[in-house]
Amino acid sequence: MSPMATRQWMNTHQWMVKPMHQREWIERRGIMIWIAETFTSLGAGLFLVSLFINSWWGLLIGWMIIMFIKLPIHLAYFGKPWRFYMTMPPWSNAWKTSWFARGILFSVLFGMFGFVQLVFGQPDLVRIIGSQICNPIYYTFGVIAGLNALGVGIYGGFIMNYVKGIPFWNQGLLPIVIMLAGVADGFGLIMGVALAGGDASIAWAETGSRYLLLVNVLLIVTYMISAGYSSVVAKISINELLKGPSAFMFWGGLIFLGLAVPAAISVYGLIQGIEASSVLLVIAIVAHTIGAFALKYCILKVGIYRPLLPKIAPM
Image (cartoon, rainbow, N blue to C red; front, side, top):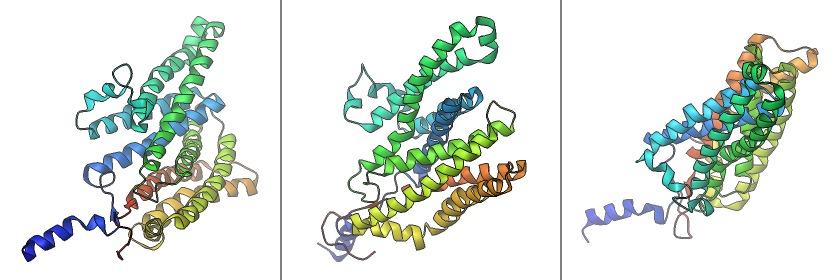
């Protein structure tokens, strides 16, 4: 083999002996996966929070985020988007083994059941038809839509968790981290609904956000410690987050904007004994949302494949 061919072979097969970044879901067209997954968490989180507090406007916005932002971006990423139905029953039994197929099924069912719930919960229609007819349908379909919203919000975490070649993703806590972060973002967005005059309470949203932020901090710390003990390659991912190329997004986007700023505004209102001003609440909502994008970016960006050979060469 010529020296040039040898060098080409070595460069092509570096994944056999060196940890290599995954790029399919975060670079070039892969950026669409990052954006779609972020809107998945935002929409599902807002829908679940709104379902709990019975906010019709929050349910509508959460449903629209999933149906008109998340799904179109995901479909645009597919090579042949109009064949997505072939992953669903009765055309396929892939949902039994594939989290990707389950995610599509969850999304379709959420869209259908959520739509019926929204129709029979619409205030004007309730006044015309009557609550005795609308309420049973609204709550029945709401429970089913909520279960599917939970599936929509968590399936992305299971897809990444299933990739055993990336130790940083292959952690049991990952789906929980993603789902609870989405619920926390839902609390942030429901504050926006309340500020716009919707059927939600700012005080209740602030309280829920305060507790979820604390839970998320503990979960992220636990997740990183657990991942660090699991693999040398996972430690490389953590180092990239703490002091490597992704450190700015981690410390600035996730920790400062996504966690510290909303928490500081919430604690300020708690100490003062009053609701924070509208300006501070808007800042908290924007910071929450930026933090949602930062979290998904960090998780996807530091996904590093374990080398095929057991001995790991320095990066």
